[in-house]
Image (tube, rainbow, N blue to C red):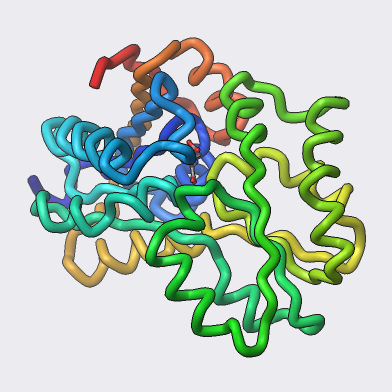
Length: 265
Ligand code: DGL
């Protein structure tokens, strides 16, 4: 393994593509291998043991492919498994958590909405971060569970999406939030609808840019960043239909990807 080795990225499904998009921009000379565990999505309602076991098999798969670093592009898998992965594997493991801190620092109304999965809300990261700001900021939490399933089906707009987003955003508006944190990597696909339903005066934020910068920082400070690569590769694997993944990836990423096919983990 050296600086020319690829970066591994995974999620319970296609959600991590919203993180991969930022990684591709931030790290233009790196090769990437993305794994979408769509067969086992959603992770949100699964137990910690279950998500840890799945994450472990995926990280092993990425390490076997020679990845020099693994990005867990999933809030739920980070909440359940990041410490175990760091203990069990030698490569650096980057996790992500909902952007609660920046929202709490920026809010003027001192009310912040957070959309995430139940697994993320249950996790220690979320509890620790929200406890720090609890005295000054009220967090209003919603588990927008249908959005993961809609995204996995490739449905990103239309009446069904509007109705579900209104159901979760309306109580946040009633609570006078001025920021909504997208705490699940599947949700940024719905950003245009969420912005429309939220209306002016409510900012929507997610963690994808921050995690891309964090990954770059680790690579730079450990002398593992690749700086020259005229034909970088972005290889995608899925535990479910690779066709579906290919369709969404080609529409969402501004780059040519290779679909390597279906892998059973
Ligand atoms: N995309 C994931 C996250 O960021 C998980 C969604 C799910 O599988 O429930 O939490």
